[in-house]
Length: 192
Length: 162
Ligand SMILES: [Zn+2]
Image (cartoon, rainbow over the protein chains, first blue to last red):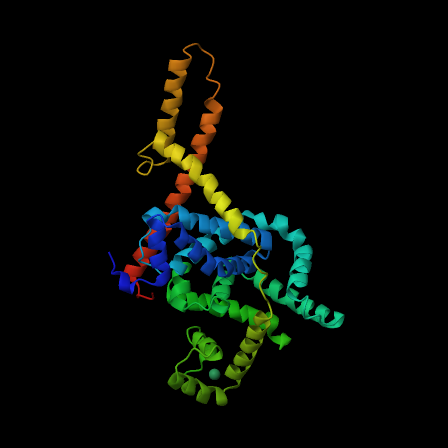
């Protein structure tokens, strides 16, 4: 058993969940809901699918509470489950069925996010085209490279943590990121 | 220094330089090299463009009913789990085949006790469905515990990055 003083706050919460404290689960959910949903959204590029997968990830954390031991960082475990679900979902082609709703989903997101900024129509078209290009470039990456880039860029995780999430060595991860960014540079560098 | 743009492992240095993750001394070394290397200058410029492009991709806010849906799923799971624990107190120790076998025996026994005549018991399909749901859940839970164990093994072998 590790001394409580050296256990990270998330792991302490998870230990309380293990003891049956549902309020601690609510706190973990509050802390990690948005990062997990956003990561999954960028992985599968569909909000409904991302939220469904994120719920499944939190459900699995809750299910495994009885056997939880704070040996790994909590977010490493959480993102490992989330990545596993995303890779399975992409492999199943489950998100293909949802792909048609992309336009509608974009409009919803745009109206929610930029309602108060009111950019000109031209600006919105330019932004939209740029966004499509970015999304297309990310979607074209092999799934594992995509996961690595998203955790590196948006979750700002260390190499060691991403490597553990993806179950590979740190040098294998660096090589994975190198290839991914090389592809992205070829596709997106002109956007500067 | 060796040109980092030309070697695979060195590329991480350029990446860390672009994201300002290098310590000041390493950053200064890279800076001196980059000042006289066109390949590195191009690579850094392109990487910064990629970074800026990715910055422009904002995530959609999470739906307000996310938690409600999650708690409903948890609640739905909890109910049959309690029922299952009463029915099969050693389920935590059993694996799918054992669980299936045990539940099948219960169904069979019930069938013999309640209705010794040839026709099958009316509630058997329902029972079988509950059994397979329970076994599925058990298997997924075991998957996640296994994932945790793999992480444990990784953490004792690798560096402590907590
Ligand atoms: Zn160079």
